[in-house]
Image (tube, rainbow, N blue to C red; front, side, top):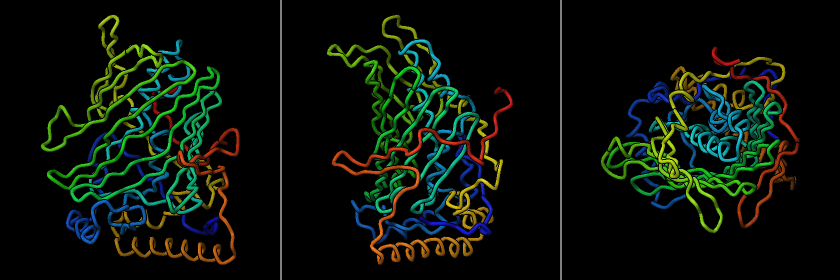
Amino acid sequence: MVTIEAAGPRPVLTPPLMLEEGSDANYRAPNLLKRILSLLNNVRPGSDLTRLQLPPMFNLPKSQLQCYGESVYCMGSDLLSKCANEGTSLERFVSVVAWSISTMRPLMFGVAPYNPILGETHHVSRGTLNVLLEQVSHHPPVTALHATDEKNNIEMIWCHYPVPKFHGTRIETEVHGKRQLKLLHKEETYEMNSPKLVIRFLPVLGVDWLGNVTIKCQETGIAAELSYRGNSFLPRQGNHRSINGRIFMTSSSSKIIYEISGHWDRIVTAKDLTTGKSKVIYDAKEVLSGVKTPIVKESQGIWPTESTVVWADVSQAIINKFWEKAKEAKSSIEEREREITQERNSKGENWVPKHFTVSYKESGWACLPIQRSVPPAPIVVPFNPFET
């Protein structure tokens, strides 16, 4: 297990990814496109970029663990409690669809989070929701997430394995693995996947979430198919970040209940095919605007493997745009990782995750939490003023 000395850097917490574009621009180095093309100059189309090490001038001042976590705990309104407390199974399913859409956040071209080191953790609470992530594999990069809310009887288990590949004019990252959202008191489990992240260089620079997402609840027989779309060539407002799909019964009749349409960064509606009436099921501005930056509530309880501690020196240097200092700090972390790996290999030791049991089968990676519930975290997200 990788550890950082107790006297090491204090956590560096940065604002979450916002709905409003432009917040990430503060971290971008000059001439970024030229630098990116130079970096990819010797990469062949179809190559797996998993092991590509980015200079810090291409990094956001946060780890990929934080980005996954923010999609769960950084919201302006509490969609999760709505999922748990709706009166009927269909109403709960619609709320789960809306919550799934809310986990998509706009990203800016040219910057990406750090690749987490092995054993890195991220532990944050928002109200009664406690969220814990751990990097359970480095090559390949596999991240496990466990979140529990005992007040609302919610449990969440994710296992993510991103695979970025270069395709000449774009980079496509397929996010393998599955997400589970369990409403314990209703005995309902919702399983879903993630769309892929596409970074385009031509004909227009851009970053999009694209592809198909399936959401299923085995217990109720309700399912949804969602298609995330973007601009294939020239930008068109109607195509930009659009989402279309349907909610249906998985019985032999496959009866369609709702048609879904809209834009995941704006408004998404569901049309009832029985009545012909449409209703708004997701308002991105309401859910994602004004999200709060986490704060340290109890510094003594922060683990040395916490993302905001591990990458603190790098993040602070990026924030200050001290690129050489950021490069030195990041190189120090990566070199230490290599030394620890070599030492472990020389002893014939296998690294074991602290918070999850991990297995690999033909169907993919599986990550199961060791503890029944996630404890409250020393890092918390402040409530919005209108919340109680």
